[in-house]
Length: 351
Image 1 (cartoon, rainbow, N blue to C red):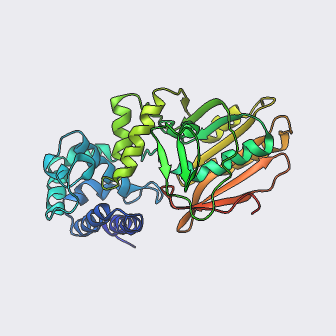
Image 2 (image 1 turned 30 degrees about the vertical axis):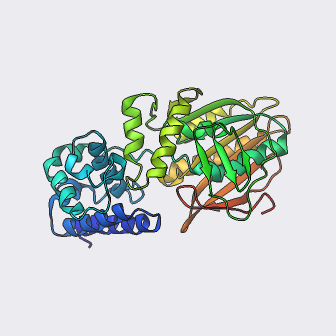
């Protein structure tokens, strides 16, 4: 039987590998040191040792790092802040690990409390990967869109149409938007000659966040990797957009909320149920029920009340963007993307 500390250490190392591949040397370095510390029953072990039986997909490593980052952003860790670009520091500082270890030791009790918080991200960059799906629904149906996002957190991705997307000399969206997503598409990109009108923006989340509050902003920022400054910039700009464009995010269980939202179709409107990096956080029971709810609603969809299911979910080392449009459409692979939304390999609706 594997020892509890070894289970935790392996989870930290697995996430360290992902952080390295996704461009965060800071987090990769910290997690490798933390794994060694857990194996040696050090200060990180004091925070993490009770979590060896947490569900494997509950993102223990990112919950831990997010809890520490929260303290940095609250000015409770000035020494570590000097190594965090998100707080104006330099990630190449020589004594990163001793500073991190010192903070964990000093704030052990608080971190043991904070680590229970779920990872809450609003990865605005993923909107570029989803954009082609939204535009494809608008193009095929000719209807305005009703947005139902599951796992919406603070609802920033419910405002995707308020952002600017650019590929070479072409673009889609408001050219004056503070959120500009550029350089993410390869040789191909979705058709940008499609208009999309949004008539409703609603989402649900197990723990909704109000991005208009200091607490909400802090929570969303704490789960952005501190050496990925562009993601911070996009998040701040998207929060500003959210202050001007309203969207409702309910607290609720995913399949229950979707079933209620799809109980009555809206004539002349295409309803789009969508989610990104959600599936792993649902129980097997909720996943099965979610699929049944969508299948039943899909059977009831008509050409005057179409329904789309748009997903951005892991498929091995990348995320896949898949779309199913009822009535009558098969499930299609539209794009592949990095987990933070770039690069985007657009494959098109013919797949």
